[in-house]
Image (cartoon, rainbow, N blue to C red; front, top):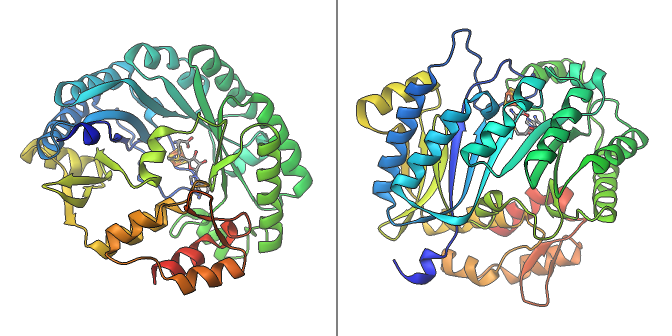
Length: 386
Ligand SMILES: C[S@@+](CC[C@H](N)C(=O)[O-])C[C@H]1O[C@@H](n2cnc3c(N)ncnc32)[C@H](O)[C@@H]1O
Ligand code: SF4
């Protein structure tokens, strides 16, 4: 591996697949179990899968680690510490590694934050979701707004870097409602906020309510007004959008998520985790068994839980690169697209999209989606990738 490659970002994603209850809007790989989770047994399995993955992708310097879920804040601090140790045994860990853990903001979980800091976590992302108790109830959350804000306050005293998530464009939400909720959130924010429009995911309780007309989302016009307000208010507060749903003080972006959006290399460890690894010069898509117990049995039997390990064709890589990169405010380098696809982007399509005001090129020759293009991002990507 060359020096340049050694400096290339390399992310490790660790998936903790358990939650205390299932939120009715969520389709993440998260499971509720009545029995206690045997964390030491999971630690051994995570360590085994880390070892197997490092054997396939050796010599990397890990620049970011992300504990996502599910609810990683249900892990013991010692579990987190043991997984970090396993990563350090099999790869070099950069001295300035970013280690993020997603936490739910209940008081019990807030009490664990100090232990995570001691274990090596240096950034937390809290799922606040709303600052209104009635809405939190509707979202099936187990915490109140006050509890969530208390968790943010604890995070602030322990971590230099913290973020929290809110879900907006909810049923019945007006522009005025969101303006005041977001203003309060910005008052509590540090360097980073993730603000997601509520999405109806198939096969969730919210999907059934939606189909039955019992849950009505804002129409497209209101959705756009809410999005515009979000961009304006966050920009004015010094946290401009650097990705469709993510806002940060410049320089305080989540480096781990940038690895995905910049289409760099990452390992996915744990049940249902996805990875993109370059093995023998070829980029491969990996995924593991989704069901926690099934994953555990596979790892215990064969040392890893991988069920997908596909070499990506040039076209697949170029499409993925577009899909991820155009989410970013910085956009993409068309030269990298051409190198991946073996042909440049279609000039006429770009010209047509520019004519609609959906994309623009920067002084450095990058291609990016404009503010009016973001609400129709999927269509823009589909058009360019076609
Ligand atoms: C992996 S999830 C949850 C992390 C953590 N368990 C929690 O609930 O706080 C990451 C974020 O995705 C967002 N999210 C999940 N499902 C969503 C949906 N259907 N629509 C919009 N945002 C969603 C939530 O803001 C959530 O915090
Ligand atoms: S939103 Fe978070 S807490 Fe709720 S089910 Fe999904 S992963 Fe679990």
